[in-house]
Amino acid sequence: MSTLGKDLLRSLGEALAHAKGEGPALVHAPLDPRQVRKRARLKQTQMAPLMGMSLSGYRKWEQGTRSISGPAATLLRIIDKEPEAVRRALKP
Image (cartoon, rainbow, N blue to C red; front, side, top):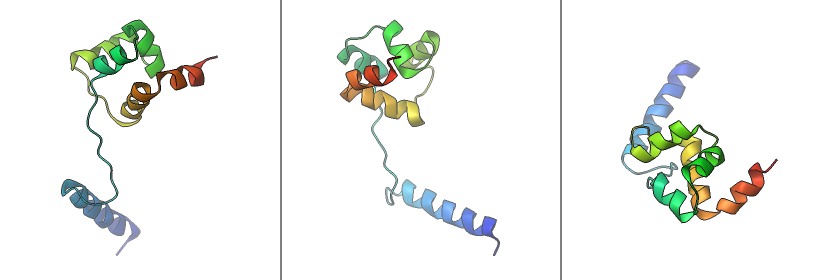
């Protein structure tokens, strides 16, 4: 079997395990960006730059018209727990 075929079979096995709730993948509960922002005592105009995005894009998250995934979801989780750490890290 080719390397591509082996990779595809392995990927399918991982996807099946993930669907069953097995395997190494971690699934985090989704966060409400509005609640995270309020807990951090930030305005939307302050939160958007922390997330590295435009104000209109951030507002779409809060309105639920745009979904949060990947690294952005991880950064949101960090802001929820340590907003000052993110501010320090992004300070010029």
